[in-house]
Amino acid sequence: MDKWKDNKAWFFVLPVFILVAFSAIIPLMTVVNYSLQDIFGPGQRVFVGIEWFEEVLSDKRLHAALGKQLIFSGLVLLIEMPLGVFIALMMPKKGIAASVSLVLVALPLLIPWNVIGTIWIIFTRPDIGLFGAAINGMGIAFDHTSSPIQAWITLMLMEVWHWTPLVVLLAYAGLRAIPEAYFQAAKIDGASTWATFWYIQLPKMRGVLTIALLLRFMDSFLIYAEPFVLTGGGPGNTTTFLSIYLVKVAVGQFDLGPAAAFSLVYFLIILLFCWLFYQVLQNVGKGEKA
Amino acid sequence: MKLEKRNLVFLAYLILLMLPIYWMLNMSLRTNADILSTFSLYPKHITFNNYIKIFTDVSWYSGYINSIIYVTMNMAISLVTALPAAYAFSRYSFLGDKQMFFWLLTNRMAPAAVFLLPFFQLYSTFGLIDTHIAVALAHCLFNVPLAVWILEGFMSGVPREIDETAFIDGYKFPRFFLTIFIPQIRSGIGVTAFFCFMFSWVELLLARTLTTTNAKPIAATMTRTVSASGLDWGLLAAAGILTIVPGALVIWFVRNNLAKGFAMGRV
Image 1 (tube, rainbow over the protein chains, first blue to last red):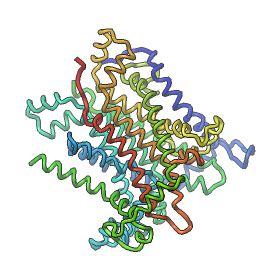
Image 2 (image 1 turned 120 degrees about the vertical axis):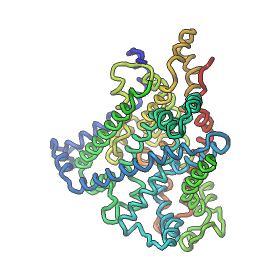
Image 3 (image 1 turned 180 degrees about the vertical axis):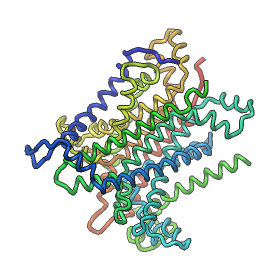
Image 4 (image 1 turned 45 degrees about the vertical axis):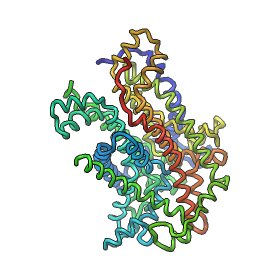
């Protein structure tokens, strides 16, 4: 099953390359420029080498933000990936029920991110919000604005509510793309539900699940609007994730240099993780089946 | 019995999923004073004033029109360019293919905050600020890579014998691609179209940076509800409900492609 070798395939890729490079390369180079210079004003700039990078890499608060970010994204993946696949397996397969389910599941994804945070402010208020009132009604004093642990739980709930549908939709589409013949063969062989899942459905979903995992990792690592609106990074700094801290740095200083260096480090961390995930997912299970 | 349990689990998930949205709907049918003063499971005095305001105030509804225009443009550009590229990645090996494939995705990985200024400068240079096409092009940065990745996955699921048989039968590439291959990956195209729509629809930072008035997106309009007297929650909730509608229509149209899956073979 080797692919056809032909460099003319580049002509198919060229339009995409030009389109993406147009928006990608110049801004990236500009940010690299910022990160190496001290900018006093228009036309007044000094080359400072890697000074900003040294400053950023030794910033204790950045380390703290990175730690919180890693925990957050780790939890997101651990919860959303299995939950999403599970829900996709439970979803109705055909008829009007399937159509309606698809539309309903997709709804949270369609709300602009800043609005998500705003809606959850009210939703979790103990006095006038359904969620806050329900938790209070169970006898638990709920106030995510003063308790760090409750702020985290609220953010995780919001995140899982908002983004699990993405995993569900991708997994569902992946499941539907498996030819019926595979299931018939499994049935004839007397395979259990679990065996069917493990040996047929899961391997066949590798493509869509790779995309789902990478997307969830990138977007949760870059999360900004929702926690910024809901908790503002508080209480204290307990929910100050990397992007919230980045904006604090960028706005708090007149100089774009440190913020640019921060952005590039941030970018490289995501790149590294995605590359690792991608390599692992590309190779996992290879050679097991014909 | 087994079927029932399955359905119940899914139903429970759906109900939990709908609660915040129901709360938004509930808020959208009440006045701001009512929302802030009393806890109520359903709107006791239903008012449509929030919706009427949005549909009659040009600064509100133009936001929806602008968003729909640039999102549609983006969806079309992303799909048309990504289809051949995804085919190349799925069928051919060529110089730098793996690197190129991964590079595409790296464009989704940059934190936006510091990139906004250079983006503004770049699009100013081309005189594109405050046009729909500017936002559509800028959103290609993250939607085209996504489209290529999703489509490549679906295309790789199509056996290559289909291509080979068609070429032996004397099909030229364009005809093969449009009449045989694309129908094979309908469900992939449906998913891709929806995700392009979705990510472009909810993106705020780039869209707001590149526009002022003529192409201002709805998500930016909604931030204006913060005024000196605080938030108008009712109005915001109504606008939020309305932002869901176009996307729900999109997924309704692609639902069969999503659900139908794989129709094996053309013969």
